[in-house]
Length: 564
Image (cartoon, rainbow, N blue to C red):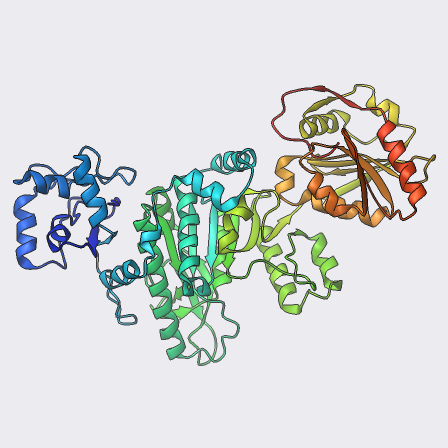
């Protein structure tokens, strides 16, 4: 059975006796045997002398009781030390474990016991199995283990004094059991791997003019219910969660003018949130503010996300919905929006409505006050891990990206840094004479400000089509969309281009999407775009294959090749 550091109580077991005996009441020395009959409560009290501070139950009068009631409050240990048959009995009889504390609300009329009985009957908690985290992660993401390992290493080294992610969950996620289970799995994975999330629940408030008292009451009831369900599912999945319910003075608001029950968020109190994070609980924050006089007001969910992100400085801000990121006029998801450049360029696109432009401007405003490595992601709940832990992603990724600079010579280029980027990107050492050999052919060098991406384009007078000699992007920049931005810059500047790539290069699938024609042999694949003449394409192939190889000495590199 699942045990957490907070008091838990097994519900919905097949045997009433086991239900009584398996009640777990060992959190901070408090005995919580509520909701049982007086006789059952008395039997437990007499038979089980509980140790303080969530230690193993000892000294029971009945050996079988000791085996059944045995509970380790370490969430990673369950029925250790007991007879295997008894372990099997416990696991088969207990379908879920939830907090014994009752939540009674005038708005909801819901108790923990009722919620967990409902969820157990619906099979929600039963789906939260004990599959190892990495196995579940790879199954959901479907990525190369090396790629997954890279991002896990990047993220788990994140500074632990602040949250890894602020996760804003739209209310429609709670309407589907499958999506709710996936959300729980994602949050559990992050928490167990020291990537601590802060969850925000509520609703986007489009207009606050006519937000009545009944609207407020209805939204409060739904948000409290959703917070309770999510916390219960997380604890059933052996992850600690703490809803910071309305009235905890976390969010401070001022009432908007007029007869409305909406407010404008003016301040956040992060003390309770930091306490949750330090005690390894996932804080769940409903989007309701409190005035100095104690009045409760609904506030826009994105406003809460903005304020909390500004105060807590997370690495990721994730907006989780049911439909995914922004889509263009063809219905395809827009993978990357690089700010501020794309903010101006998007204004000319047919998909950029005033509503979407306003969202982009607010996201840009938020990123402007976050660390340079921070990003905002809009994704669907079933693609959340894929978006976080793959280079290709699965939603819309927003980041203030490095500017791309153009050079026509090597005079202002740091060749040491450029060589280091190429060496790491290709996993080979660059020929020491490479820059001297191409100096007279050089057309354009593209470099990102921090040397995380580069492209070298040569002018080949024999064919009249520019040749992309090097296209290198660090793994970190690949996941941030810098490579895509660099490619779009090249496409704008060069209507025709050709290049080659090793046949076993893992990035070739990306090249096939970008090219208009290609040719392959055993060692090389030649790509081009902007060329329609058959005779010219044959000449390009012959020219590319005969070019001297400049990356010649294999070396151990921390990242994989991004080009030839």
